[in-house]
Amino acid sequence: MTMAHKRSKKRGIQHRRRERRFVPSKTTTSGFGFWGGMAGSLLLGAGVYAAWIRDPAIPYAALMVGAGAALFVLALVLGDVGTAPVRIGDAGVALERGTEFTRIPWCDLKRVYVAKGRLIAQAEDGTTLSLPLRAHSLAAAWLLSETVRRVPEVMDVKPSVVDALPKPDPGDGESVVVQALQVVGRHCAASGEPIQFERDARLCPRCAQVYGRNHVPRKCRTCGADLGEAAVAL
Image (cartoon, rainbow, N blue to C red; front, side, top):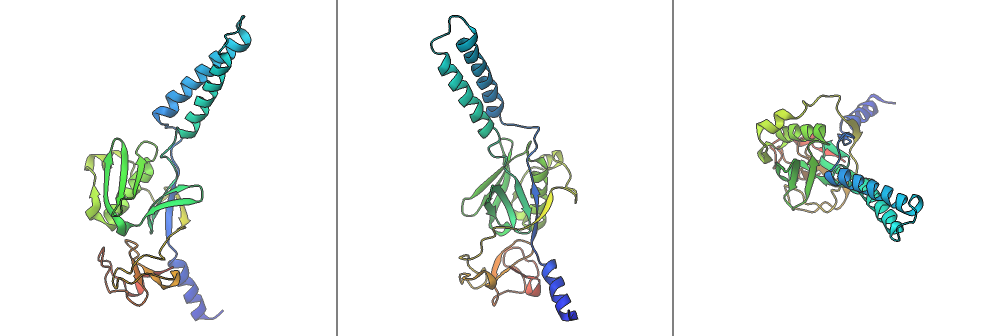
């Protein structure tokens, strides 16, 4: 292996986009998950008693068993809605649901704010990601920290909320390579030309703004970061 090849390989590793993956806290659950599960359990237990223990059995006992079981399962499924794993890093913020990602790059963020116990990330196109502060306190802390570092103008959160969250630590979350980053079809922020092939895209390392490889400016049009050779190829 030549020295030139080693340097090229090293640069490729350095330019890999990474993010932190956060899973929700298992100690919290939604109100529906708690009360729905409790009601389902009680109804299921009452139905079992009415059908097989009480003599004579209650005619609608089977309906009670079915309704209780259905309510209990529904509470398990929907109890943690909104607490999917969250990814925060070079490409922005994303909610992970199985193999599907809903992602907002930093450059597309319009506003980050808190409402009804949830941290909301809102994009220019209306896309909204919502993080429950209790279940995702670490992810929320990192999202606010990275927002201040990368696109501070969209921050709309009171200092008291920030102070109540954990302090970000380098060991938080799981470090993973960025996945499912869609750039084909986006327009170069400098020339306005559409990106037709992934290999032609270059990203700002700070805000993930997209440029065509032949139109990378000296400074990012969105966040003002120095670009040139610092722009990241996919």
